[in-house]
Length: 255
Image (cartoon, rainbow, N blue to C red; front, top):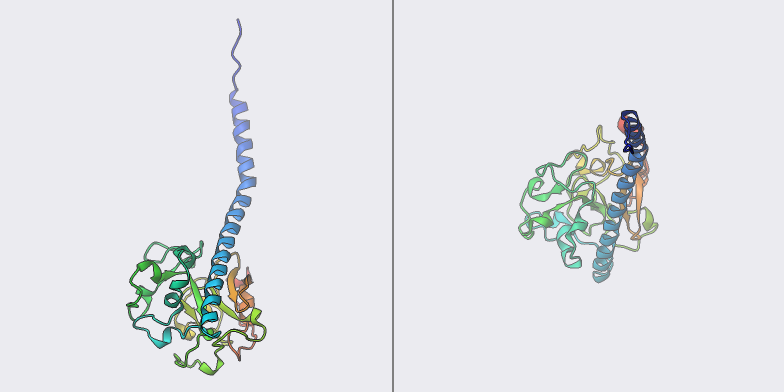
């Protein structure tokens, strides 16, 4: 009489142990691959914004949009409004690592901003809610505007393309708000995701560990590259921005 072959309990346990070991080996690699995929998508989004920016400046004699300071009540001159005619895919407004606002359950530092919640007015020209949400911010110093908030000198603004060393001038980047006004004196954030309004909404909005110790930045030569957090203070944010090295908090030193 033939007996049916079957796994013994010990054999089953050995198979389970092997599978568990393989998963333990593969999971870090899979997680890293997933993170890399999100970084690539984020960079792709910024490249699409580069096309939008290049078209806009090309149609306006090389000048960037005036910026939100011109009209806080409607949002008419902000990049998030003026560039609407240049793209159709609204998904490019969001980095894959920061797709939800705090109100939608997003957790710092991986959150999108919502101008309806943070601005003093509701941006009346932005009727569609989708257009009020994003996770990239413009370098305020590229805007062609004569208005100023706080102690920021508009004479330091770039205003237009065609500058020297454009590959060091940030235009759009991963950001905790729709704009940032970095200054050399800006301290590094004490903790990741510290998107404070203090210091004129400067480097704290940009310096966040969104992509494994780096952020994606679109530069004025329309190139996009990952930039380490410590390198942010070495870029040419405005005409008189001098490279500096602030005191690094522990969370940045560990990166």
